[in-house]
Image (cartoon, rainbow, N blue to C red; front, side, top):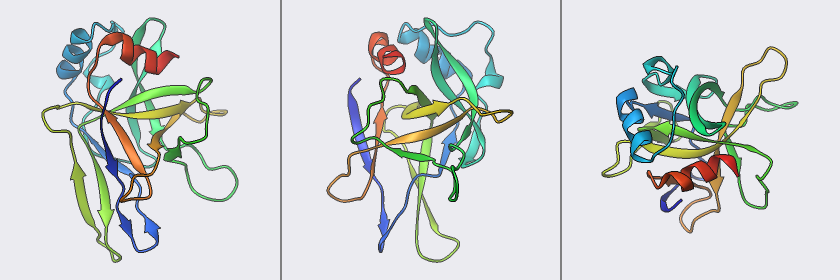
Length: 186
């Protein structure tokens, strides 16, 4: 899959700001058309309810992810952020460097925008990032089954740091179906 850009995370002093909020305004008809254009199959029983629109999907909220299901792509509702292990909060951005994901559950997080926040005092300034000329963006992620009665969850994958920031996010645009499906299944 071709990379169309990495968005550098903004830094405020010594504190790195990470993506903890995104927007999902992709209409189900747009999603279906994109999957058809990419020659990717989708589950016949899915509907608009599987791709709910939301102005903000924050850590702990439920949001849709795209994952492989046999030889088709399915939309699955999961919680944003892996549950904490021990002390600390949920993991919502997952570092990619130095790790092997060949046995990981990969997903694409459909989004129309994501947000970063700057400032030292509340309320912080909210910055909206979108793709130019593409109504649908996909953020590469990982997902995990829930333990016990907990729901499945997902985290956004972060990439090698760029020269202007501490972390960056890789965004993708629609590409030929073989490449999209390969990302989710290999």
